[in-house]
Image (cartoon, rainbow, N blue to C red; front, side, top):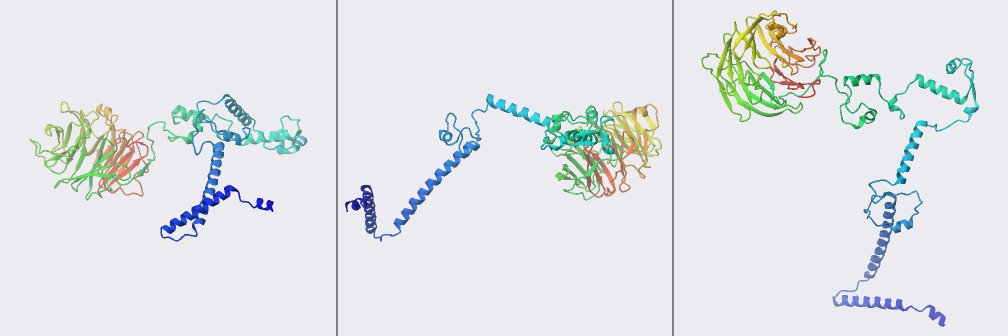
Length: 562
């Protein structure tokens, strides 16, 4: 009886806890009664649920800590940075140091240990040896036992090394077949990892010509050829090739605002981004040329003044504007202030519609009446001198230095003027020309081109022409109507000639070979009546102004910069 009592006896600690719980429950009940509330029967269950949730959360936190510790050991410190000078003793106890697991020691980032260096070197040498040997993955043991008679089969006689050789082993037969296959089908060196010499005779020639881009002369450059953002081929020279011209059509230069009348003048600014377009709609427009949007910068309306020609001064400071009036305008690009040029004192010209500007930006040559050429200063806007030629003057062109002037007109002669003394020092007949209509001098060299009313264009060497040689270097008769406009590109390798009296009457000439480009004008594109043309300072863009009020823009692929 005592044993049963002792077994069923309640421990003192349990009794105390029970008393405490009962006391707590009584107190809580008293409190609830004091507050005027009935006791809640579910309160005890809610407390038990909270305790159980708390225990589960503690178990989950312990498991997460263990997982983090394991991941840190396997993959380095992912969740918490490594504290230098402290070792994780618990981790070392849990995992055996001789296992295949590894960790990242970030404290020793300056140099590797001696053992690690030796291991890396040994690994590199073993990899090189494997590459050199290139051991087969699988070897057939029957090859050594087999014997093949290569003298009986006609196709196998080529494998013999000696005339009397007939029977060989299987391994020799396999090796000779491989050698014969390699002989008949030579592989590419770049696909072989054990070959590092990629040079060839063609590449040596390209290196001599400078056709290989920098950084690709050695094998390492070939290995990294796809890791570089550079041109793989660099042209050996800047010579423009004859035959076919590489070009592409871009968005119209004045696509943001088309002209309401024929375009009479287009020209690029010296910065190659600004383009002016002017015409008979009395408006001068400026566009920023990028080949895509060609945003409009500004437009200036000249009331009652149809523009026949507009041109930048070579220094880029002003724009000279002319029309069929007794006066012209000069527009300051900084202040956008207009200044009037004329009427010129002592002259009775009714029109100052045609002019040319000297390369030094000091002189403007207007075409006057009765063969007079009117020289006006760009600073004072006053007449500083006149030149008189026989017959009417139709065209003038300055030389590169701006000290000489060429002129042609109704008498079929070409005049050379010295602007320092304002005298004519040479007069020569333009071969086959009845009346000259256009002149153009090359920016580099001593070439000049002369166009006539018949559509013929003669190209001369100026030194030979002044020396008495009247025969032109080349005569082009591709145009059948009067030549109205001619323009050399900046490096003088191309000449554009056009006539506005016929549609698509525009030709591009390759000057070094004196041949016309066969693929210009484009067959599937209408150029309309072309009145004017200009190349960008570095030759990348070509702009054409036509009678439809559009400025066509083309990209010349030979020239990389605008």
